[in-house]
Amino acid sequence: MAFGNTYEGVKQVTQEVRKVLDKPLIVKLTPNVTDIASIAKAVEEAGADGVSLINTLLAMKIDIDKRRPVLANNTGGLSGPAIKPVAVRMVYQVAQAVNIPILGMGGIINGDDAIEFMLAGAKAISIGAGNFIDPYTSVKTVIGIEDYMKKHNIDDVNSIVGTVQMN
Ligand SMILES: Cc1cc2nc3c(=O)[nH]c(=O)nc-3n(C[C@H](O)[C@H](O)[C@H](O)COP(=O)(O)O)c2cc1C
Image 1: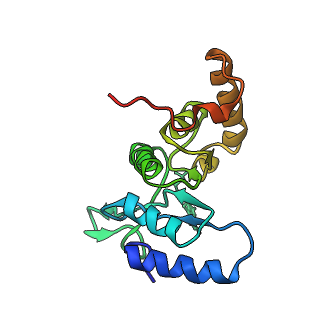
Image 2: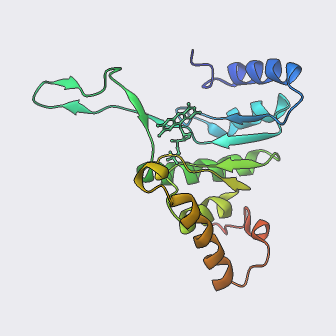
C-alpha cells in the first residue's frame, strides 16, 4: 500500500506508529513524490525522531526483442550511483525544511559521496547497493571520510553537516 506519497498519509501513519513505539522512530521517505520537503515536515510534525532518505526511484527496463518489461513486476526500484544526485538534492531540500536529524542514502560508494550527503545536511549516512558492488564499501567509506577530514583539518565530522554554501 503506497501511503508514503501524500502529506496526510505520511502524517497519519507516523502518528499511529508514534503512539505505540517508545523507541527512536526514524521514518524512511520515498523519492517518488513532487515535494519531498512537505512530506518530511509531515513526519516531523507527527513526532518522528529522525527522517531517512531516499528509498529507491520507481523505474522500468524493457527487453527490446520481447517488447516486454524485464522485471516480473514490470517496474522496480532503482538504487546505486545513478540516483545519487537526486538523493543529494532531496537531502538538501529536507534539511532546509525540518529540524530532526537526517539519515542520508542513495548511491553512496565511497567517502567523497558520504561527505556530499553530510554537506547537504545528513547527520548520518547509509549504504545499500554499494555493498553488492564491493562488500568492503562501508569500510572504505569510513576511511574515505577520515581522509577528507585530514585533508581539510576537520576534528569533528559533525561540524560539516549542512554547511554547503549555495551559489
Ligand atoms: C536489494 C535491495 C533491497 C532493499 N530493500 C529495502 C527495504 O526492504 N526497505 C526499504 O525501506 N528500502 C529498501 N531498499 C532501499 C535502500 O534501503 C536504499 O534506500 C536505496 O537502495 C538507496 O540507497 P543505495 O543506493 O545505497 O542502495 C533496498 C535496496 C536494495 C538495493
